[in-house]
Amino acid sequence: MTEPEDGVPGGGAPFGLIDVAGPSMVPTLREGDQLLVRYGARIRPGAVVVFRHPFQQDLLVVKRATERRPKGWWLLSDNRPVDSDSRSYGAVPDELVLGRVLLRLRPRPVWLAPGRRLERLLLTGPLARVPGLARRLGVWADPDGL
Image (cartoon, rainbow, N blue to C red; front, side):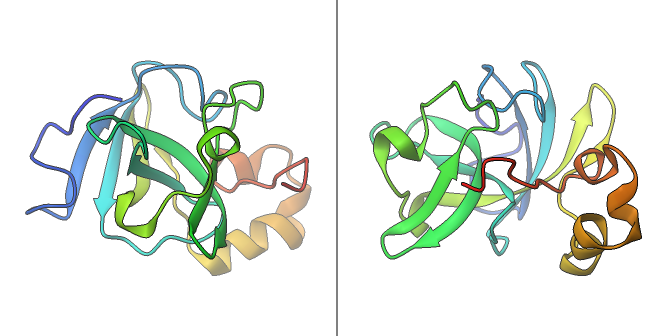
């Protein structure tokens, strides 16, 4: 992950742009994707988030928030064979979670932060029967139940 183009993460402007580096979020995100992040946004399970690595805090990382635990957020890669996530460094403290990814801007725009109501419809309602629709709209149903 490269540093935001418009300032220090979590400081000043509530929005920022970051570029993806690495394969850990494939198939959701790929190397070179550009993301719009809302710093300070409320995090909930299923959200794609940006945070400072717990052991190397100058490194920004993008992962999926899977659950809130007593010591912070459990953050996992969408690309499960890549285990450089909470499986190797544990829960990430709240103060290191900087914000939520709202939108992939490049190579083509994809919304990654639907509201709860739309998310529920995409996962349990009639829209759930449309193959791939939930994923295209940024809703992640964990196939492993993790």
